[in-house]
Length: 278
Image (cartoon, rainbow, N blue to C red; front, top):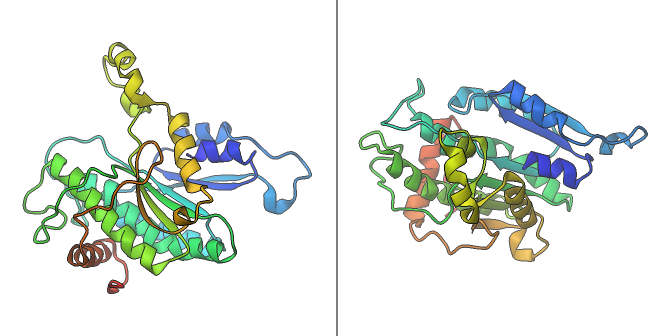
């Protein structure tokens, strides 16, 4: 996504990468185009990396605090941290399963803290958008008596319920920031190193061709959606398919679910205790 943005804007962008791997970030940034000498300062290429562990809410809070102080506005937020870990619940010192920390809590906290800066850009009439790349359309009902899956945890249950968690908080965020779009996306099978790097991949990948896309193809579709000039795409909460199409509303998101998930997310990530809008 960052690489596509850099090339689409011919380097006239400020892009901040967040993650754990400095070497990988350096390689990605090295591939970005640079603006020529003489480019106005407000249009010059500005690329940087901030190291953060998405399983640590304390680190996420430190990063969002730093960015909130340093930046006047943010046009786009794209979050996609994940975990390839398998097995049972693996709890952090903050009481959050590591897979769910990456898949939901870190993403929520990053967006929750920085959404006011996106709103500032939107109020200036600029293009904006927030996107979480996960599994839109793959939701399940959630257990309001076991938020965070402390009592009963399976990886499949975690992934399916996180879909409803995301859709719930995005509806609330969209109500709070009515000029910003909040997009939960299912990218399909993308041939990232997680897919191509496993043993035997070279034998299997040829058969997956019709069902997979390259990271570049995926990014083009997702940015096309984020940059859409259609009025309904510029605000609100959306669930988006791998083709950039609008999916139907998550039927598991009810007022009761939205309120419970919001309050749970605030509590677990260390946010301010605020009630939902409805």
